[in-house]
Length: 90
Image (cartoon, rainbow, N blue to C red):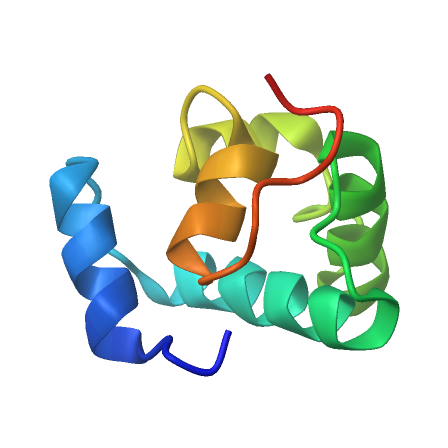
């Protein structure tokens, strides 16, 4: 987590074909805050709940997260946030 920077996130996102918007950065901040508090990256359900609590119910939906981080939002989001892969993610 200490080696992570916004530039690293941008480069990783580029590899995934994603251009990071402010909506992406909001989720990345939620992910990093979750990790700082609980010392683990959230799986999908806890991520949806954390985003909903931090950013409101419109953004705390799995469809919103799938749009921003296609495939596995918890896994891809954690990667871009410089966090380990969430437990229970394939």
